Length: 283
Ligand SMILES: [Zn+2]
Ligand SMILES: [Zn+2]
Image (cartoon, rainbow, N blue to C red; front, side, top):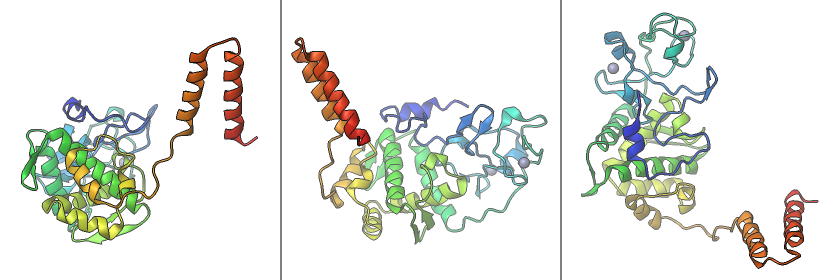
């Protein structure tokens, strides 16, 4: 069940979260024996045929079973619990809490989103093998995977509490980052991505104008690949330059005092730090 090939492909990307969440790998939010998120997905029909959890079901963009063309599940249909195979007392295909069959099919209607989500899923899966052609030129696998994640994070940040409806279905910007989201929410996001990639970059620019996507929405995402930078450069820039972090100025001041040295060096440094603490707490 290791996903080293995914981590290797995204190796250039720095960790964005202090909770060790890797981009495009679903988070389970483990806290001792508890789980905060439904990180492990499954296809009920696949489990019925073969009681094995597939490695690719851990990936955030895997939302549709390409064999049965149905939406994956991430919770027990009877009690709504997450899937924790190692806590199962009976079979791996049964819910660890209520014992219900995970292979029982629930009719999850995702409508038009299914086709576009499947399209995005196929492109992202293919990116682990070879370069992806985009607007007539090949994009390298790490650049493509990273770029897709950056784009979705930026669109989600822009939408925040709003909803957006279009040919791909309906997408909402609410909730945490996509690695924490339920499969039903991720289907919508990746359906939007599939629709955007179908006619790149025209559709992306049209959506950017419609929802007011600006350069500021891409700022938290470091390591933007060239094909995303091209889009970002065409968007409205932020009106003010980013404020310098006060901690950077303070550290620089302290380092200068230390390098100057002298008898009063320690008391000067203490005075500067004390002033900074007082300013920070407002007394
Ligand atoms: Zn299946
Ligand atoms: Zn259950």
